[in-house]
Image (tube, rainbow over all chains, first blue to last red):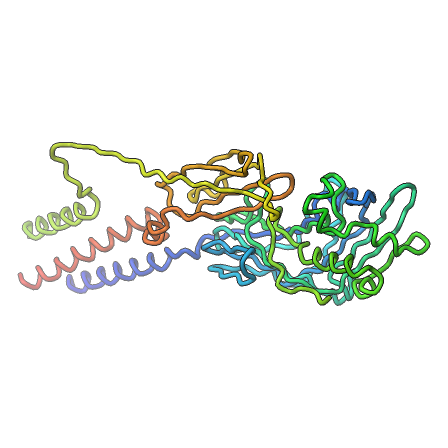
Length: 272
Length: 150
């Protein structure tokens, strides 16, 4: 009788130990990861282009797919490669057409979606596809910019649509705070940032600043206006813009995606 | 019977001693402390080569990645120097920003220590319970064999 009790006790101890070891894994702690899209103040408040056009945006639609956040160690460097070697990755299922101009001047970045019960840790890389939408306000385009530009009493309503698709691979967010650090039971976020000053330039910085040197500005688009309206896509712009302006536009579109102020690797260059 | 229990108690105490008491012994106490200092210098510049003079610098230590460990500014040549706390091995992050432009660089400090110091992920309660279970298992085994011998 006593021997049986001892054997049972030993077995119970072993089972308990194995159970405790099994429960002690790293995968237990989880949190929530949110994905935001941000056109920054340039889109929400409007701005003056490098060539003096005061631009206000009614809508800036981007169509996003394959949005993924990664934990990488060593941290992913977008200056080197598009290959993100990750330990943990979290994908946001679905496709989203987001209006970056939504909500007015004081609006927060747009919440694209969130994934719950993700592994804790630092999501220090993110990638996404900017693809043609199959339906909705950006149908057949990956990017649609709608707004009004004014200069010296002239007003131009413009719609610039981009059908080319891009994949942006980005490292860690660069900004006022560090993002993407998920702790147990808490919510963290990563941000898909879009820099439209790269296309139009920024009147507030010198003309020889690299942002303005590499930007198309708005003059080339204004020259295409008929009855105060511009409505073009990338294919039509290829035939109407000068070769230099078109190539500049093509280059800037590849640099549109950021993470805060952090740059991204664009691994799908548009056809020129 | 009383001898058996003495044996078990002694064995348990011995194991507890092995598990939990420090192994360091002090004779003529000499306490030597040292500081290992590694200075890191970064140079921040735009793609054009123009230095990021006066750029804001934020340094994050690996043990608290959300809270700035150090803040400062680059000098006229875009340089910034700091000495990371070598007791905090891992990947240090240095963020540099100026007028809407910025980047972050990750610098490994004492990475060997990190690679060999992996965390098992157990809570203190789990560790204590596992230790008790192991000790009790050994004691039970000893009791079993003692009983057979008797």
